[in-house]
Image 1 (cartoon, rainbow, N blue to C red):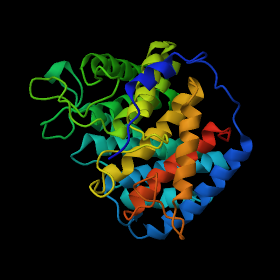
Image 2: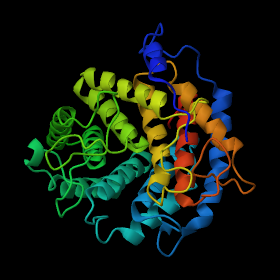
Image 3: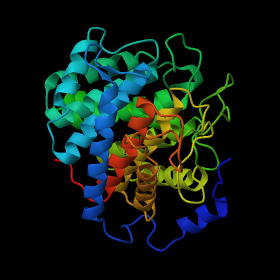
Image 4: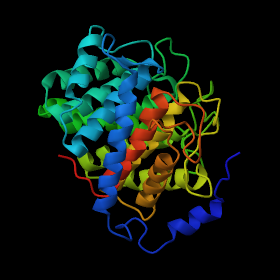
Length: 363
């Protein structure tokens, strides 16, 4: 069982002088270079699972592949390398006939973010157009049940956090990327509408953590506070705050991030999900890296003492516990028997996030 940090430490942390302002120590470019080099080694190991004929990675589910696209684009920005452009193009070409749509709105959201990231890297219009088409399908999942929000699946059985966090994040990202003023206004309106609903939904609990979703009475179902539900919202709120000029979303994001760091880490500051080490399947193996990736986005806009320290500690622990083939397991705090493409992508997210936080600049 993880040794969770007492809540008293969270409140003490929030009261530290300078909380909410600049980091207490400057970023370290030498550390950034080390994390980039470690990421490169990890990516080489990841690509041994890549199948050219399918454009996907063995040992993952469909949505995990979208996160692989995202980490490839993120690493490529920081390292200024063209090495993975052919992989991105091949994955797109092999899988674009159905516009990356299926019955799960959250799956669609991951792909929309993945191709938006590929567009930021390449400025290839087809990637942005795909992200827009995916979002248009996601928007069909919105209705008045529980006062708003989109459904998790098209059969409309469950309104949950991750689908709506992704809807917010994709809307905000598209508003930031499109050059069309009318589209920008529409996407921003969706992002603001989603956030207004989400903030009032009750899914953010009294501990500033996000539970999994809503029950049949449209109340917080008190299910697991998975790490990725604490993560995706950070990125969405950061972009929304920048677009709207409203600082409140950043304040909420900081509160959620601090709560997650305090409550979901062990005494060494390393992040865990409750399914570890052997019950995470192919879904939850992906979650922790998503938190790290989005924490780096928040840190770039609204740093708090401890964000960079968290990212550094987790990246260092991942690297320390790699195997001889530079493969990373589901457990970041020690050796792990569970290693696959999803655990690799998750850990790579954390390494790239640490590099960004230490001063590696996006090109």
